[in-house]
Amino acid sequence: MTNSNSPFGFQQYQGGAGGAPTFAMSLRRIASGNATAIFQGDPVNPVIGSATGYITQGAAGTTRIDGIFWGCRYVSVAQKRTVWSNYWPGSDANGDVDAYVVDDPNSRFKVMGNSTTFNITGTLSTYTSSPVGQYAQYAIGSGSTSTGISGAYLNTLGTTVTYPFIVTDLITFPPGAPGADPTTAYNWVVVGFNNEWMRTNGAGPTGIS
Image 1 (cartoon, rainbow, N blue to C red):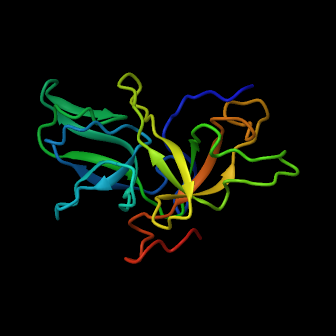
Image 2: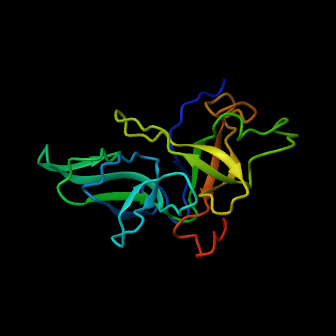
């Protein structure tokens, strides 16, 4: 089966210290006035210039990320009750929003690679180049307001040590499954955190353990 250009954000692949279903998520906060939607599987950044501990949807760059957003709860102004949601829609909260973020520094995620940048060359048994071991940048894409799922994907490989992720593996099984052909565009890879708040030492990342 040919891979399809259908990004889904960063989906939990393997836990670090925590296992399913929580994967050692942390409780963070989104300001009720934050009008930027955040989708399940989106990287999140700290709100720069703020000492409040708030997070917001990630923006590609070399700013540290604070983890992967997995859902939220808030008191809905419209519904007059507590709402649990895959995504923060950008409005409707009475007070701060409780956000659940996967930030275990040893977590692994599966994610779609853009175009052919994340392919191997050759075959699985004799490839001559691979994205594994390289730093990776993402694009935030467009999340779905119907499902609440992220549209983020990887779009750049490089040697920049402050990129937020590092590629640790390729998705190749089961053969013929979506994203499992590493020789064609839009294949899926496994990544770990690189420049993340629990991994950084102030001068750069500490690397994947």
